[in-house]
Length: 307
Image (cartoon, rainbow, N blue to C red; front, side, top):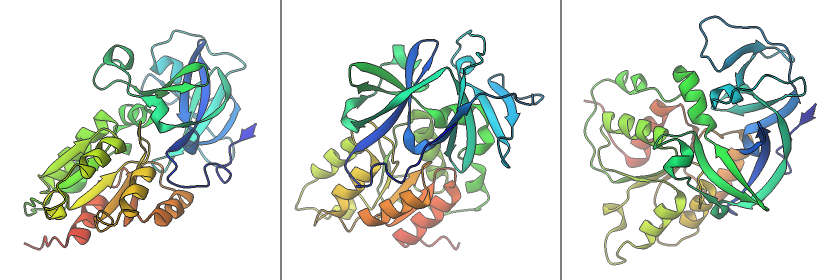
């Protein structure tokens, strides 16, 4: 059993670097952000759950926590028998523990987000494919999987819920310009749908932090900044430039630091909160909490929704 400790990983914030854990399935290299990994254990017997998603093997209880096991080869459409030496990568994101079956774990590479590129549609499986990026780790090309999308497909009730907005009741329309950096096409659509339903209709979406930063830097200097961007929402994990680097650039800049900035990510933990605070983020929250996000936006923008 190998436990992955995050305390020694990327202690300096805003460097635009990531630790990628490389693993194999049927001889092909895949990767996951180390920040999502809690430990690696040998595969174990699981209890089958009726009516579960075909890729869900079942559940097991390694200590005192019941964890769902996802057969990652099966999810990816790879017809391969389970091996006695298979491993479970136990992850924690979106406030959930989930185990993913893989064949082997190769190691960890520390790279820049600029070394991760969006795959084309033939590799990712279309506009909403499961490959979120292709990373150059040394001499190897590693496919970074969109684990948030995998979980959203397997268990839709665990991801962003539009009904959280419905429960807020009637809301006023706001034309405040909101800029959002989110690389997942699926989650970007879900966030935009929820915010528009909440009355925030003036949205500008960016697939990564770099494109948002470039657009911000290109704004006219003689114009009121808040006419163009009243608030920024950013994910953490993104190719080219991550959310922590984007936050650092904005909050270290004399002109842009006044823009309210929310980090909205599946990776929010106490350690990540400390990093975000050090970088100057105004608020941080876990990605499923879309209702909470809207409440915080209302507060930061001074939006009154009382009738």
